[in-house]
Amino acid sequence: MKERRSKLLLEQASRIGYNAIVAFQPENVFYLTHFWGEAVAICIDNKTKLITPSLEVDRAIQSSSKECEIISTERGSEMISTLLSEINGKTACTDCSDYYIIEDIKNKVSRKSFMVNNELFFWIRQIKDEEEIKIISKAAEILDALYKICTEEIRVGLSERDLQAKLIFEAMKMGANPPSYRSTLNPLIIAGGPNSALPHAEVSDRKFMTGDMIVIDLTLRYFGYIADATRTFALVSATSEMKQVYDIVKQSQQAGIDAANDGVMCYQVDAACRDLIGRCGYGKYFAHSTGHGIGLDVHEPPWLRMKNQEVLEKNMAITIEPGIYLKDKFGVRIEDSVIVNSPNNGRVINLNAFTKDLIVLG
Image 1 (tube, rainbow, N blue to C red):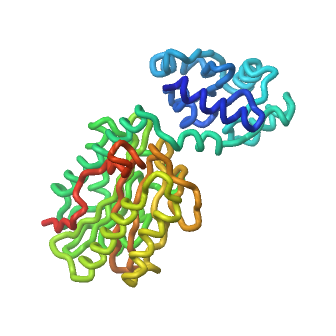
Image 2 (image 1 turned 180 degrees about the vertical axis):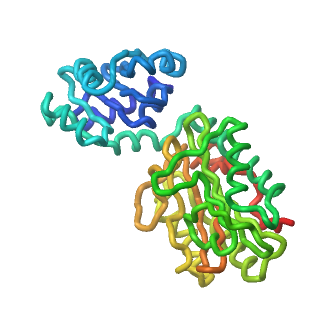
Image 3 (image 1 turned 60 degrees about the vertical axis):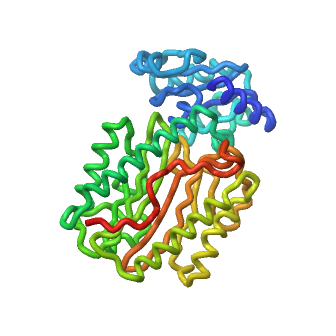
């Protein structure tokens, strides 16, 4: 698998005039080597090398693929010197986002021989191989198990924060880990009552109350890969408006799943969800895109949003997650992780089996 990935990257890089790949980002290093840590991965002459500080060498040996040569060095300038000696005479494409590292390298080699292009990595990573699909599927199974726990644990008086702690504990027992986001202080979205009207609500100490709609957006990493799903529950009772909005979102999400086939443009999937919600009179309350790619990043291409003409392809992993958010009242979102055009007769494979019927707890 790793040889295939490095080959694809090198083939694509060669089309734009480069014959070496240099990965700094942990996601891309892992993609090429199975090692997640402080390191630089190089693909050159159809070989993959992993440059890592001496303190990480033993761990790299344990986790990286056998096809990968491991090179021990030290942090800082020595790591850069080792990198440059390995790519000597080659033109390299890199994902490095550190300005000072790039300037240091470009002061030592021709600026034209070292280009930053993170999109190249995303472009290759969009199409998942068999191993990746298997891992993402397992991550989605863990999310389904956590939603079952939600039905057992949610009750009047339980706080959002207490539920998050329980779910993270259970997830880690099952081998999953919460991803980190720079844009939030919490790994999960657990939002009850009026908090559920905030698409990216922060977990709070608010306690669940009778009549709450509760949005639970779970994103977890399993062996490096992400699955992402959302379910919305009602607590004790649900008003007719809540039931109506829930049904609209459910229909919208199914419309998006039905539309997400190989060869369909991303904006068409977004339109399938958005148009249905709009026809029902709630268009202005659907405030975000319909979905995004998942993989080694929580959010990665393709982007299922308005005007995006990128075409979906077989074995892309995406989310479909329409929602309606009524300020100071409640919100509803339903989300699944799916694989585009996987073996089920050309239709998407939905990786999340937990019911999307409205469950009124308690």
